[in-house]
Amino acid sequence: MSIKNTNDNVHQQLRQKKEIHLGKTRTDIAKLTPEEIQKLAHEFQVYQVALEMQNEELRETQIQLRASRDRYQTLFEYAPIGFLTLDRDSNISNANQKACVLLEYSKTDLLGAKFAKYLNSEDQGRFYLFFQQLLKSVANKSFEISVMQANGYSIPVLCQGYYHEMSDTAEKICFITLLDISEQKHIEKQINELNKKLNQKVSDQHTELQMKNQKLLANIAQMKDSKNKLIEGKARLKSVFNAAVESIITINERGIIISINNAVTNIFGYQASELIGHNVGKLMPSPYKEQHNNYIQNYLVSRQAKIIGSIRQLEARRKDGSIFPIDLSISEYQIAQKTYFTGIIRDVSERKRKDLLDKQHLNELAHVTRMGLMGEMASGIAHEVNQPLTAIATYSQVCLRMLKSDKLDLIKLQETLQKTETQALRAGQVLARMREFISTNTVHRSTIDINHLIHDAMSLLADDFRHSSIQSTLDLADSLPCLSVDEVQIEQVILNLIKNSIDALALLPRKTKRRISIQTYLLVSSEIEVRIKDNGAGMDNEEQALLFTPFFTTKTSGMGMGLSISQSLIRAHGGMLRFRSSKGKGSTFYFTLPILEDKNGH
Image 1 (cartoon, helix red, strand yellow):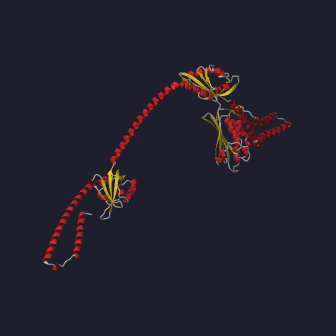
Image 2: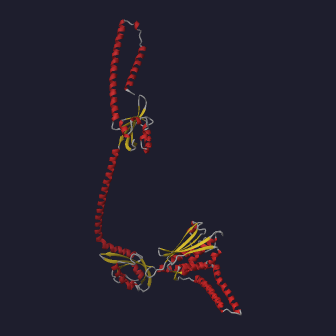
Image 3: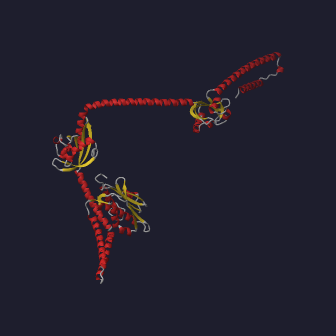
């Protein structure tokens, strides 16, 4: 509202008050005496002078108000801070030049527009929340916000707001100031970067000082340790040596024993005085005793060790002359440029005895499963034996007819007798292989070709393949290296795995194609892998988890020992037996065996 309108309102209010007063005190002039009229005229003159003085004061006040308005308008327009006035709907009702410059819009563009229109989209929600809080409070509020200029750039500003209600019009206005803090932000960023660099430099210097301090402390500690090294070393060695269960012997580079622990006496039967100062060969049987000193000297020259840092199985000799198996591990250390060796010796006689019993037990279990397997294959073996016996009977009848004939053909008779002999040898081989497979109960390793072993197993199960209408596929690698294994035990594993696949396929519907494939590979790990795959029903997760558990079986009849014993047999040969199976997609069993190395390790 302008100052002129304010003055007009004041005049109008005064006039109304005087008219009311005159209405109440109205006097009939015709009835007044000349003296009363003169007195009344004088009062009007005085009142007129008072009114003129009031008018003069009002004019001066109006001039002052206009000057004040101009000053504040100039201050508003040319202030270095952007000013905006907003109505209750956050529409811009006024803006100074700095606000226009800051937003890069003209006042015409700004007036009547929503202020949030010129804010970064991410800050619009924050502004509306700020504006609502501003309308509910008479206190100043401020927060940082980003405004979008006409050129599309976003700049940070400090936004301060104040809510005011005009007393004369009851109009509610929000005053907003916008302060460009881009330079401040830039300076703060530079200060933060400088602070980071300064902190990093201080941290580096602090770390460097700590490292130097640690080195200094380490040198001090090392000096202290050097003084007590001999005493502490002796105490530590004595404590460790005498508390250890294994025998611990320390020798010098000439093989002379310089210390032993109490376990040496318990295991070897010698007292410390009988060993310290003597050559360690005293505890070794031949040929280790004669080779030991040369081995130490060769190692000191070449620094190529075969047993240092590893565990090796050897034999040792007690005081009474008895020989027993040991595990030996050797470590090396140096003191004052002299080399010493520490050997840890463990008596493994009990372990060897238990391993032997385990192997005997495994052989007995394997023999039992072979008996059961032969029982399952009895019909097939009977068929294999029956064929050559039938042929022998046939050829014998032919020979008898030839002998009764008037014209004896000796050449045909000889050929028929040779065929009879061949079939008799074939039947004998089948029976011999079956007898050897059943009766063998000792481990006897020999050099074999795994492919030949697979063919032998397939011939034993030929009748099972025909009876169950199973198609077999052999994909055997050529020129595979030989294996050093117990032929009967590995054949037993192959028969077990193939028989399991046959039994699994027998459960499929009759019209389903039943397939078994056997493959051999040479792996880069110097092992041969054998895979036996079928397209049977497969196994679920619960069955797979228990598959190698003794006495667990998925068959309606069976001991549940075949796979468990097969796994033990493969492990005893240094290999691994594993499998893959999916419900409804069949199973694949595969095992590995290490190939036979020659004397050169090839």
